[in-house]
Image 1 (cartoon, rainbow, N blue to C red):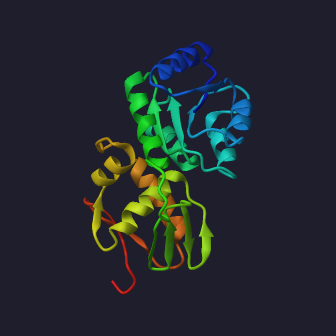
Image 2: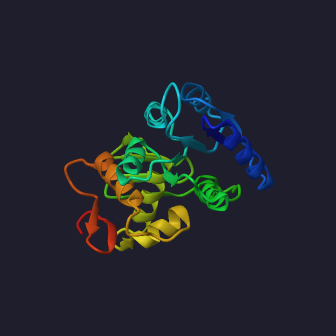
Length: 225
């Protein structure tokens, strides 16, 4: 895991805490250095601070997302909703405000890693799911729409996987939160809504594939339904 934060003392404490959880951490203390390391492809997850010298976390994330879909958990001292949504809009998988409980941070890290890393190797080919022109390959974690590749972040892929697996059924926000983050949805948590909005735009070909059922959740629409 890569931790990018300009607070050297906090980074050392976090590294030691994660080592007790058998999670190895490499560190960078400014935006450009963190971006360079993140682009090496050596890390399963990026913990990214927002306010840093040289290049803030939002700029790092926007640059990273041009070529990499590594899962990103943003750490921010900014508690306003606009800053959190900016992080999600830039491509973050999740966010956690500072100061945070170290145990909550570990729980969120483990939730992301469980979601993006296979539980165990299998000799059988991973199944593909196809509906309404969307083909989702769970082995390569790739998506094609009418034969064209669609680039998704890890969290967008898992939302689509959940919705398309339940095509025709409404999936609640609570169900998505449990699936993605292993935690309860709160009235002020916009993460699911922002990720679904991004997913809709990427799948938009003149017809809605994901619809909102107000007050309930989201539904993947099958052709002819």
